[in-house]
Image (cartoon, rainbow over all chains, first blue to last red; front, side, top):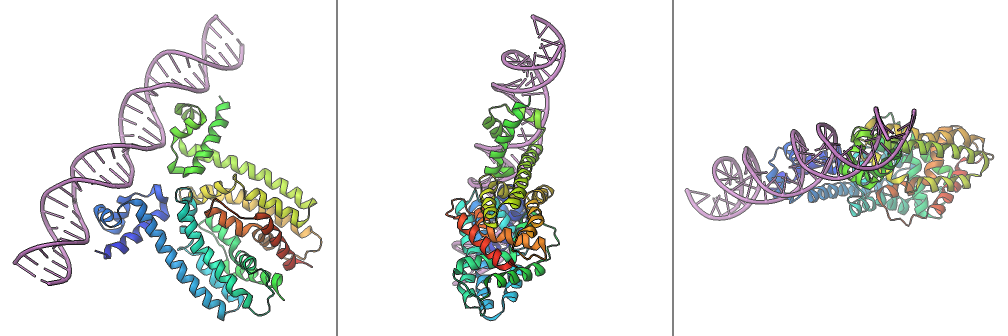
Length: 188
Length: 188
DNA sequence: GCAGTACTGCACTGGTCAGTGTCAAACTGC
DNA sequence: GCAGTTTGACACTGACCAGTGCAGTACTGC
């Protein structure tokens, strides 16, 4: 009954991420999952519900990541946090999903908004909550500082990755350079 | 003959940006342009060619903007440049097109890459060429500094705008805060 | 073993859509 | 005004696809 659920969900994720919402057909998802189309409809009702389930699953992963990030922030230095951050965001799990939701943000506005709020938004809030406690920093506006940290560290590489798949994005170097610039801008 | 071209192009832009490549049908474009479908096909041959023409036109606009930015950089202070930059990028001309190309980057990889290179990439190169000449700054790596400037100034608002339409994004304040942080990180 | 549920295979409906063909009307340069 | 080209109206083809119906098989707990 529900072994299929997860398999279908994974196949749907693959399909939607590859061809977008309209460009993916349910027959393909069913075939990829090794399941009959009827089963897909029995479990998920319709294509849109399936799509939302895919996004929900991705949000759950982002929330787990954010908890891990909170832990890192309490333990690590900025450079370590920066590298961890780019490693997670510039991944094949996150980038294609971002592309998908950005591309479908007109068809599913609330869904894109919800994803933003509960994934990148949550990361920013986590940063804002913990950065002020880091030694040697002087932070007045925690939210702005969190944004500056995040986008110094991964902004350029992230933006490029959204457009371009196959790059030599050298994220480590950029993460360190970003963290260094952040330190210069926000040191006490 | 070619009065139609521009009208069709504008209608296609509207359609594609609203519903994506697959989600837009040529009949709608023709109707929006007040032109018969036959005329669309006579001029552009097929849907894909029309799509590419839309993107080409957008790139041309970006290139003009980049030239204006180069001028601003030679004349204005950082804060002025920052405000001009966010004003242009966080606009209804740029954001929807970015969404479109990011969403279609798997269907048209070279096109997305070309857009990135000739629009945001060009802006970054322009910044890298001019920032080192600004007084009071100490810049070793111009490319990295250009990325840091751009993403401090508009990164957070841009990322959010890609997911979320109806913004309270207060871009001016963010632009100034970003420019200020950049100054702190890169002052001599 | 039985009852009930999950699943499959397959055919089918109704709708959408890219792209074509045709022919007459409108417009162009000359 | 005329010859040639551009455009419009409209019907049509072929393909694709979401979602349904159904009848039968596999699997579950009891």
